[in-house]
Length: 242
Image (cartoon, rainbow, N blue to C red; front, side, top):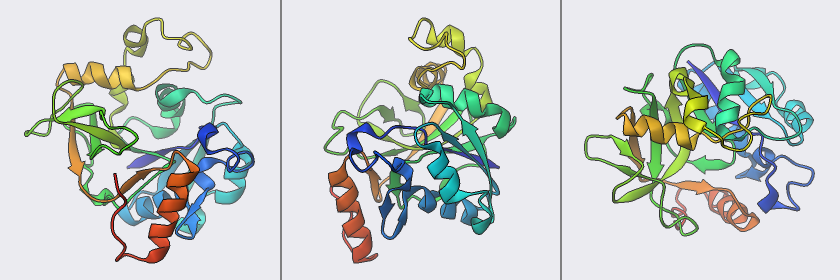
């Protein structure tokens, strides 16, 4: 099974920290955010990881190399000067990911979620990890039904953790789903994954799991520093406040 780590963003809300350092290389608990992911993927038995890049791409390549130090093989999906958004990133990386289900993880999150809980293949097109809504995102993203089905509407709502398992078939017919979204006509296309997920949800082809452990969207310097302090305090430290 392969994995995709999304690492192309500019990290504009993290300036000046990201002026010369890609956000996934910012450190928490003594190691870069992306290294936490690489270690957990390697422990799961994943051996091939695709990392997409745009902003400060050479810094990521220099820091991670070919992945051998984690017993991984890293393939680089360079997107150019501008990130392609999540949907464009999936489409651009698809030739490197192959035809089977793959794990995808946002490079700018941290969680104690056990990747071993992920299915080897989703029942439908996608399996999403959801978490309690943090203070900066109180309305959440999706609803999780008792049978594990994920819907765009409904309650109670949870927040997408940026961790999931996907089938490449999720991308089939993407132009018809995206429509006239800005960037869809570019080469390579630039578009969000959310409309494709919502379409799959309407067809009943997305399920998920509620992770009640620790999770942080490292979107601001304040959240980065808080997370770093918690991790350095050790495993007995209380979970981050949502």
